Length: 160
Image (cartoon, rainbow, N blue to C red; front, side, top):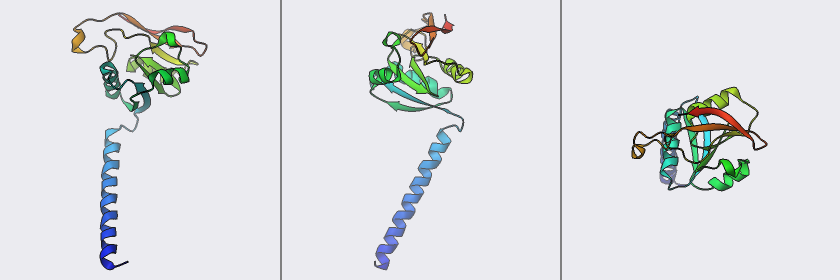
């Protein structure tokens, strides 16, 4: 290899190393070291899903978002269809279905009950992601359900 080619290769490696270092630094700064990792499956065109994701990001969650596969993920993770909503998530081994508030997910992870996960069936107005200015001050009462592994449920939290 000529000295000129060797010099070019060295410069390329140095440039690549610099870019990699900059990318790694920005990822470390962007993600809090104690952020809670969560995967979300949603429709790519759903605005309320994006708003729910923003709610989680504001509450120390680090998200991996899949813009497809919500129905398949729900089925694969065992969440009964009767609790369905517009997005499905997986965090700490628990399934999260719909517009569950971040505080309830954090409580679930702290208490660690023997359960499948949490669900807010449907899309109640006033729940995180369904609380934008388009809805005005309207807030419907809704419940966050703790879904058992056998498909039964009980109230985990209520909002009015």
